[in-house]
Image (cartoon, each protein chain N blue to C red):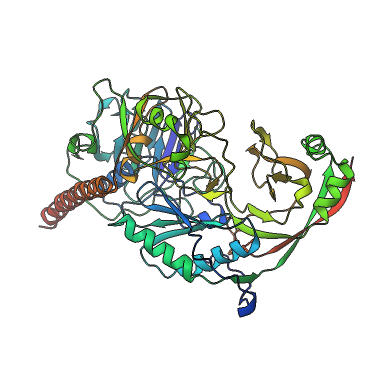
Length: 331
Length: 239
């Protein structure tokens, strides 16, 4: 059992989301940085898609009521009873110990996984909180102080006494996921259906750096910069959308839809972010800058393969360590 | 978990089928590397949507798709992994569209009681200005219509309804209402629908319906399904 001691607004329970219901208007939701969520779960011996806490407002503090294996990945600086934990780390907390997560300047969202996963009811196949729909997680709402979270039954994994960590994906895959010299995030995307209607403004879309405005959240990021507009107004029939679609409302400042996006929209779409880059976008902070880089289908496949290889490595290594410890414990 | 299914699906008799025109090819574009959007090269009408329904049914046999999202005379096909060659996908989708024969989904009929006018009809005056019709006339044209659920989307259980009288078409607002109430009966362009969530909304509200459209705990969470018929019954008109 976990007790939430201190939380800001909009921290929620998330897993990998509930795809499969867009045709009845239900957004998939799920972790904004699915890589960090999957790795946090692997580090405590869970299935990759177990439910965890997504922290996007800090500081965040919780107390363990009994010895519990946990992992913290993604953003944030974590301490357990005031002792600093390495980034992307798992270990076992004792009963009564307090985990605190403070913000880190580089990225936006931390994930805390627990052995056994957070036990809230499945709604439409997922434990993810849908704030807009007001279901999933805890009654479809954000976490609040004094919330008590029950955990599922752990897989019986034994973690190393000193803990276990991974090399974060942005380090391990730095050659494939570059950041510009001035720290502008480079987000790879492909032109979408109405790209050609933007004429000369299409080039301005790719060439300028966009600021992630304060009107950005799990639903989508509103970008501010030099407006881009189609050469003539476009009236579209509503069409299905996915996270990563970059739409341009009449004002000319693009919106990138994210995990809690509507399932359909009617604004013209200028680009679609590669799925392999969405986890990085999910870690982009309000006020930071990004630039869209025109990519190719071949590059999308190469990035998918690199991420898959990295995940295989993390999965194999953590399972090997846990198996070895179990063998030792069994002697 | 069961998904909502139309009550019955009937093939349209041979003579009533719209013949696909080989000259008019669907427009196919991508969103990212895994999602492909097919837009029907047709008018915004029931025959076009019937072919979209047929295409959706055909695509359910493709085991490399994770999700199929029918829209308004268009369809988004989301692949489980990035396909090897997007040209091959485009060709497959085009072929599936050419083969898709119109199907008629005879769904259920849903009657929704509406309070026309009143505190939630915040855009009725603008609609009168835009159409040149009296409020009573706008309301009459809306409740006398028979509507077909073309697709669900945007918010949980929201049905896009086709069949709005062209005299009361009204473009979406350029500045959306920030907190339009759940239950508002709205017009967005040539479409109408009932808001299922309270929040930002660019459609024009002319009334209010207290009708539960979605229950995530139910075996069939959404009340509406593509092909259903919707009628609005005026419970009260407050003008």
